[in-house]
Length: 159
Image (cartoon, rainbow, N blue to C red; front, side, top):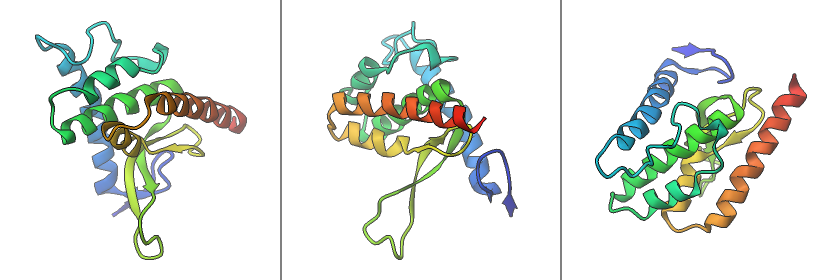
């Protein structure tokens, strides 16, 4: 089944449903972690609106350096950065192409965010993987902040 919805370019219902589930699960998971006795997410972080927050570097580093499994850390950083990015620029969760070894025969996708006009895509899952694997946080923070500004400008120019 093929559906057309805001900004997705027309994706199957299965994938659209997965994105809706991700949208609900991401923030709910982060809020759950805030409520634990030894929270990995600080209780003062406004999970319902991260748009007013600066890049959540300390929280990302706390998750990255935690005792959680690599898969859990990857997922949580994806959720946190995805929610932060989404709240900063508007837009929606989407599937974003990513580099593959043989692009002529394979196409890979990661979870990401598309700005409101759909002109700028950020592969949040790939960035989260890089962070879990030890990427330079100064670079990642600068890249995310630059992407936010670029996305906002692109959305503003399309209005």
